[in-house]
Image 1 (cartoon, rainbow, N blue to C red):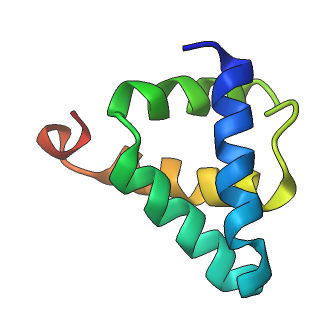
Image 2 (cartoon, one colour; image 1 turned 90 degrees about the vertical axis):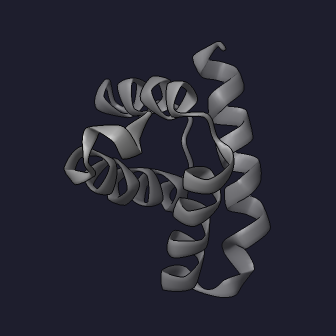
Length: 80
């Protein structure tokens, strides 16, 4: 999937949860992406994030950074 499409999708999720307040929104965005995005999609958005995350809303960037840290420390079997 193209990075532009992933950015669009992530930002839509962010917009949905933004009204919940900063901390809750970040947690909710992270949880949603962890539950519903294929590991390959997450890997692609992390690569985009690692290259600067152009186009990602600030809440989404923060949520993805937190999720990337969790994914990196998860056992290998849980990441795929």
